[in-house]
Length: 256
Image 1 (cartoon, one colour):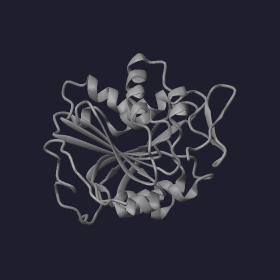
Image 2 (cartoon, helix red, strand yellow):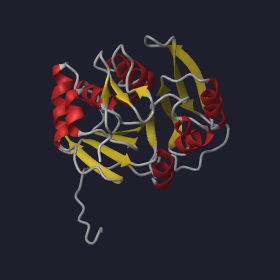
Image 3 (tube, helix red, strand yellow):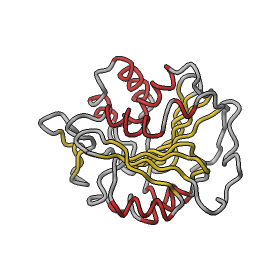
Image 4 (tube, helix red, strand yellow):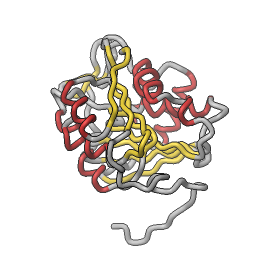
């Protein structure tokens, strides 16, 4: 069942479950572009890479994904494969997804492609494919802590998003940051709008170098972090899994 949405008078979607807006009343595009994409130094950081993997907590209405996808399409030095992995416990309906598409023509067109595949999102792992398999969206539908513990992937960038720590504390506590760190390689950049002291401390404890950056209104600051622990991470130097050379097909029999 899709997550019910309440629409604020200013058109912002609101979650009754968490008592919080999905985006600032100033809109979500500036946040997506400046806090997350720019906060992870993209598209510069992915220039000429064979593959780039982004891990996001909280897919919501997919604005971060659409903005990242658009930046990839516009970049002549883009990686051949863009793999966007996002965790979402309560996916919205296709109707609400379409209702909140940006007015921007490029993003709206990409959002309509996303909506075409936005169905059957039961708890578990779902792979959506775009641009002839060059853009992959893997959705982990379920509790972030549980889903991330079960999965093995190494992210080049992390978008740490979600409802505020006061309203959704389990997404921002020490265990959550430990879960994020185990999916990072040395040099993985992380960006978030949240600058809460306990979040900064939890990231530092997991080996992130943390600093504040100028914020996007109404916030004064955003947070940037780079994974550079004093110890040697338990990952292969080139990350897990190995880069995909080309998209393929898989047949599953008896999946239940």
